[in-house]
Structures are given as structure tokens and as C-alpha cells.
Image (cartoon, rainbow, N blue to C red; front, side, top):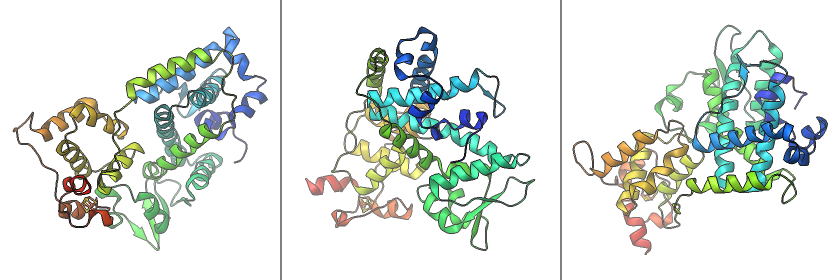
Length: 344
Ligand code: SF4
């Protein structure tokens, strides 16, 4: 990756090497743990982790796609890098996954804005380069005055495979000479999963001692905070492939289609899971809203609305919605509900 400017560093802090960056700025991790003047950066890092875990957008100090003043850059970059260190020390997958996804979404917004901007070509190139480095997608712009980009069909198919909304079906897209045309928003959305996995890999691979002086307390607090997200074990080896797939899509923060949500909700209720254990699965959905999720699950259960209790759809129906991922274990069953029973 080329040398980054200040705005770029603040927008895409995950491109920096955490330990090296802090060292280059003349700080050691121990200083952040002990110097009261540096405490604000640690506090901001904790705030960033907690906001991400709760699904609340982190409010950065970047205005109009640029850093506001000299104080913004260290706040943005240090808080991200310290969050990476704290997460590594904490080692809690739920926090790491949620943080990575939230930061990916944040970066996605900047990528979209940077793709759109055509007055500064250097910045455009960076957005395109980030996308290429993370996903191997070659993005090209059609016209400098239009929010229109194109990528090869083969790249599009690989990266849109888990998007089930109609707009992402190739048949509904403008395709010409082997390329698919997309807006900047769609291009950035296409690489959210890669952004998220790049950030989580960064966290897992950062070199830290097992504990750093002064970090013990925030690490313990984060560990205690993470308990509210612990979900009773949901992914069972006895779940049919279609259900495992639906859970995986949600865990990655991808959008699960309406039919996929219906399948997952009715299946889990059908095997006796209470609503309060099912609802947390949807927390990573891009459009997650706790009230709506609870309402919809209660609706499926027949506790609200018309009182109709909905049943898990048949395998035929699941197949017709492109949500079936049958394996040999599915032989002879006509409804996902039978999968567990058959194997037992
Ligand atoms: S065959 Fe049925 S149970 Fe198996 S993956 Fe397809 S829909 Fe699910």
C-alpha cells in the first residue's frame, strides 16, 4: 500500500501496522497504559469497541470526509490501533467480530465517498487500490461525472453470491461486454465482508505480550461487558445445511433475504428454541432493529398479528428460494425440521 496522507490514515486506520505506527509516533504501549495524558486515547478505543459491539455507529471527528484539525488524526488512528491491541488482549471473538464488522461498515462509507470524488484522482486511486488489495476486484469508473462503475462479471459473481436481494441478481443488473455496472455504494457494499475479515485478521495477528501494564483494568471491563452478548450455543452440528448457511450469513453481517429469515425463524421455533435465544442471531444483520426483530419473531410464533403460527417451509420451497445447500445427510427428508430427527 502506498504512503497514506493524513485524511486517508484517519479514514482507513486498519491499513497501518499498529505497533509500528505507535512506535513511529514515539509512543510505547506501556505509556498508553500509564500516562494520564494519554488516557483519553484508551478511553476512545474502549468507546469504539463498545459502540461497535452494540451496533451503534461510532461518531468519528472526521467532517466532510476530511480530518478537522491536528488533534483529529491521532485521536482517530490511536483509538483504532489501541482498540486492536485491547481486543487482542481480551481475545473475545464476539467483540472482535462485531468490531471488525462495524469498522468495515465505517470504511465502506469512506470508500463510497472516495470513489464518488473525481476531482482528486489520487484519492480515487487509493479507494480502487484498497478494493483491489482486499478483494482482487478491478473497479473502473465509466465517466468522471457519473456515479457509475464497472467490474468484471466473474468478480461480481464471486462477491455477490451471498446477497439474496433481487437487485443483486445478475439478471437485474446492467451487464455489458463482460462487465457489471454498479454505483459507488454498491461497489463498497460488495467488499464489506473482505474489509471485515481483513480487520479481524489484523487483530488476531497483531503482536502483543499476554498483558501490558495499565491495560489489565480495561481488558477486564471489556470481558465483563462482552457477557451481555453471549448467546446460548446456536450452531449445532445437527442443524441442516440451509440453517447453518443462514446463521453464517448473519454472523458475517451479510444480509439474509426475507425468505432466509423466515426459514431460520420458523426452523428454530420448530425445534423448540425460545424467541429470546433466536433474536440475538439477527443482531449483525445490516438493518438490525431490535423492536422489529422481536415483532417479526412473535408474528411467526403467532403471538401477534393474526395469531397464525407459521411452520418451517418444505425443502422444495427452500430450494425454490435458492436457500438449500443439501448434502447427503438431507437424503429422504422433505422438511428441514426432519433433519435433526432423522439423524437422532
Ligand atoms: S434438503 Fe432440506 S434440509 Fe437439506 S439443505 Fe436443502 S432445504 Fe435444508
